Image (cartoon, rainbow, N blue to C red):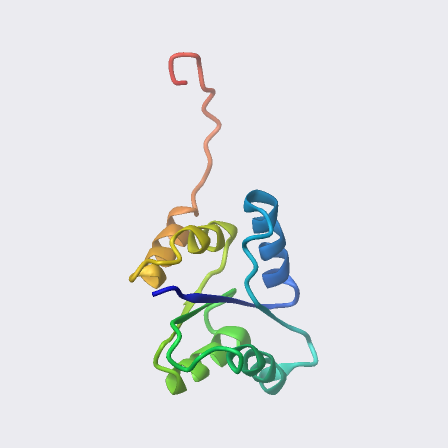
Amino acid sequence: MEKQIILMSHGMMAQEVLNSAKMIVGDQINYPVVCMTPDDGIDGTMTKLNQILSELPEDKEVIVIADLLGGTPANVASMKAAERPHLKVVTGMNLGMVLESFFLLDSNHLAEQLVNIGSQGVSIVGTKVIDSEDE
């Protein structure tokens, strides 16, 4: 079953991560975004999310990728997930997760895969010089 992805963040992060993903894979990745402004608070953020969800069938699998565990966007999505059993929330949004969600849209374990991709993408990059034998 195809899943719907929604990106949520403080400020414009969700939109800008989507814009970056479009630079890589093109306009075919076009997820709805909820960008919480300083004036939105919980109510305004919930209104934005409800608007997107109102356009989807209740039984549609939805994964919200939010920026920060414990932040208002993730908390709002979690409140909605309590009412909507087909909605999952994954936090720690990064570009790798968003790109992976596009390519694995049919996966039954997408939320778990996104967590793995997100955590695997965090590392300290060394300064090792690659010589011709490494290539």
